[in-house]
Length: 148
Length: 148
Image 1 (cartoon, each protein chain N blue to C red):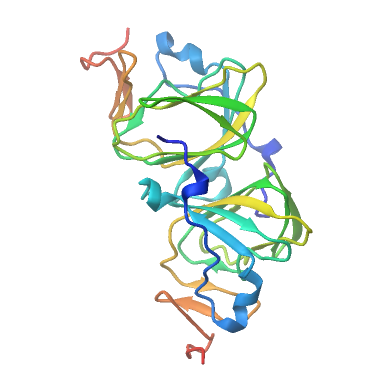
Image 2 (image 1 turned 180 degrees about the vertical axis):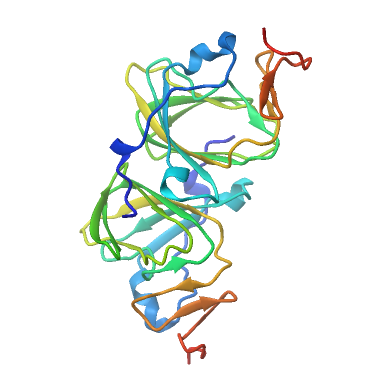
């Protein structure tokens, strides 16, 4: 049956971020919808941000496009152009390699929910605000050294 | 700015369907969001179905996955397993080559809106209910002959 039963798909707040940078995504609960339902052309995440939670550390990917559509609640999109409120039905795009770090922050006192589409991250990912970089699937400091 | 101004993106109800099969999509108004905003990994359509309109003729693609999330209103998803109502926040997946023709039909008296994600159709597309087939980017009858 094509309609997904979202209640049966595992939800997690797991992150690969080093401890120093993981706090902001502790309240980010997500379900990976694609692989469990037989899709492989692209990934789809159903994301719930608890109050205070961020979608990620502000970042941009070298070789993966991303698309987001808000379903419920409100988040603040922070990028190089400033801050933009995102509400149900609002869409945002994050083209690969555009050098514009982006993040959704839930600054409200209720949950917000959005869908994020993108291929799994295989290229380098840049984090303009913190001393972290993703390369070869591994988080390192900007000088290439490992986190302790 | 990553947030899309949907009011500035062209909307169309264009279809490549032959006249005999185009009636059901006359009230399907869509905006292609990806190319105009710099995305190339996948396509994204913002689709409004007027009352009575269908998302497409019931179909399945040989080599393109599709994902849909409802934003507002209500549509009936018709596929080989029957009929399923889709409302805001509901998600559906249509894995490539699954042989399960699908369509969203707006049987309500108000518009419904959804986001559809998928790569542009390059493979053959099958239409189980009508005498039509998509191959080589061209709509033909099931015996391969051209529409008159």
